Image (cartoon, rainbow, N blue to C red; front, side, top):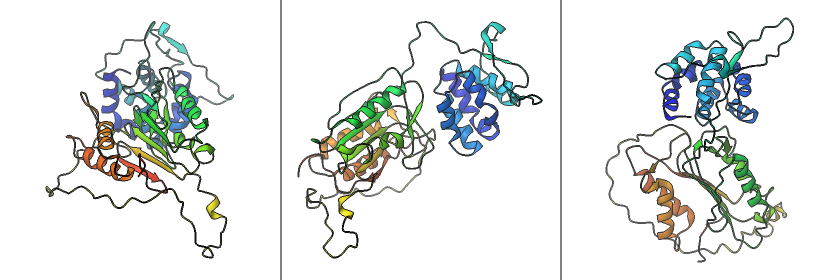
Length: 364
């Protein structure tokens, strides 16, 4: 989708979220190939009608250049003419001729009128431009294990999933941990465990919790009891945080590292103190997982055009300076503190930590 079309959607966002009748659109959006069935089900799972409308507007911006005019026609065909006119205003859209549109098959029971098709049985056919190169996100999607091993994918989201599943199926018995680093566009998604999602190169969002689940104790036996670390450089939504003013604080001396504890020996329940003697032989399915996000859920993640993404560059600097002496959580606090002090708009990294022990990149 072109930038001007995205700007029109952004300007109309409040009205769309408030008024858009999403239930009338699903069949038309599917028939015109604006979204796939899986994508529509993902949007429908966002929650209330307003939540679905908000997610639809967000996901629509990731589709191709034909999605915007096709969406306007969908609005017209479902009688949502005020919203169609709102999006059309200020937009230099070419007039579609009968040859540019294709019929939509309407299936209705005898005696019933179709609730969706109100004015015309025709919608625009998706525009295909010969020799057009597919759009790519500004970041690569990278999976790493132990060391950063780049595996950029240029074809489709399903390849990203296959790459991650392939990584999860490997034998990790001889390794100490697994690292997955994802850099892409991001969005809000419905979730139960871990918020957010990243976009594949085809514009389809992949939920972070789905990615993490590939590596949990049930799906990846050779990583049971081992740290599984996920670093997500992606927007968590579209909100922009201007922050708030605070009084200047005196300089804080760096945190002193406490005596190094050995992580080699697992915690043992003293004999006679437990009525579950077999409890130490099993672990919770989501144990030993840490997901570090570049920004708070729902908010934009920023990058400098010259130096790169705030979170990634800061994380790199902190690891380079402190990885020899500090544990991961302490370093992530340093990253959060440094990134939160940047820019006119603010960004707050954070993490979901389900590790059982302190994690060091080097042996103590």
